[in-house]
Length: 145
Image (tube, helix red, strand yellow):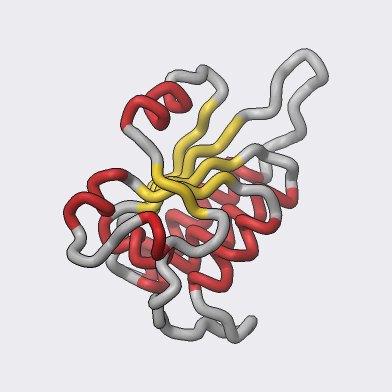
């Protein structure tokens, strides 16, 4: 599992570290999908999203499945070192840094007790049509966690 995570990290780092686009190109946008049940994978998604944002890459993140748990104020995930923060604290940081973060409609409709009123600040519900329109862009890259 750790080896796989390391390989994914290296592959994604290579994508994010590729040279700056020429002025004739538009900056690629990033769609980050977080669905894993693993809190460490959630944290890695937030780390790489933050890295993309520091490189001025426009980021949209959709949380669904177990990843949707991060969007609610009652989330109590593990603390990760060396920063001593949870994946939700990292999520709040990427929101403050400019990422557009949304919760999938299936999570809200199928998770007992979940509703938009319980979302943390900066997370909004989305629709399949809205995400689909974003995905249609020829300049969109995907990261799935």
